Image (cartoon, rainbow, N blue to C red; front, side):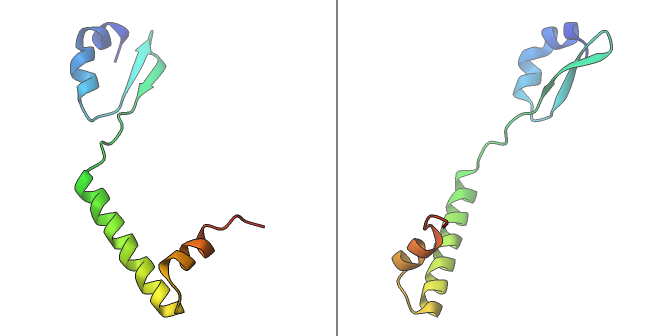
Length: 77
């Protein structure tokens, strides 16, 4: 879309979830890519799944979750 169209519709365009290109004289001068808004439910579900996986792995290794975290997040040599 051209600069004039962008200027005229900026509020609507920026509220939408679709990316777009702004052009000047037919050449791209900018891109708009909206961020995906995180879904709190999806975040909670992912955290719960990670916690369950960590607990399962720790049990299988016969160590505590804290010990597993120490192993996983230890600085690389």
